[in-house]
Length: 230
Image (cartoon, rainbow, N blue to C red; front, side, top):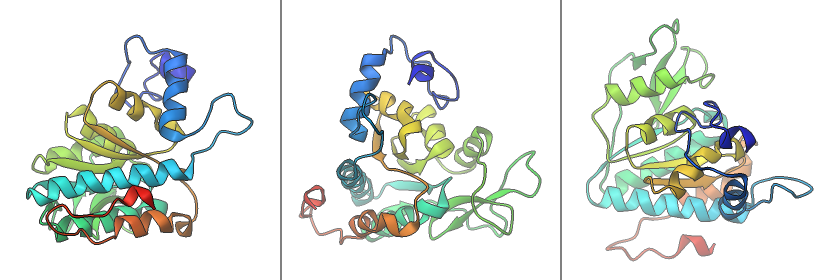
């Protein structure tokens, strides 16, 4: 939080520095969005806030998809988030949206990064070296992805992928742990950002409730139930 307030580029995820940002503002944001207090005995993401954020993310995906909008899904943390993004991508397709992918045989090469490239798995962009998924995704690779694709109406992502979308002024749904507080600041400052506060790095089974929420039927004519009430 101190680094973010001071405008440290890494803490700001390339989105800042944010003028006039104070420790009190960040403490309030931490509690309001992530559901935890910086002065508590432990600092962790409140699961109820995760579900609420996921419900809001689902609403944004459905709103764009039902208007026939284009959505890009991308994750720099496939070990825990690939399933969540993939289910939202399926939801978007079923609701009439266009999930943007590159159908080429080699994906999008990452300049200056050896054999690394960006490929699509179940409609979700991920980085790969040809054998494994994930690993480091730099800002250049994320920006290159958005440069390569036609400009979407919405990006659903995390890490550098989400940061690149916010910097480009694209509406963004971002899955963010506590080190992603810059996205919360961006949303509080009026940018089109929806934060899904999630503890990253857990085993895939820890995200089952988020997966179930993302996979719920899209309904008709806006008659969805309230997923936030789960």
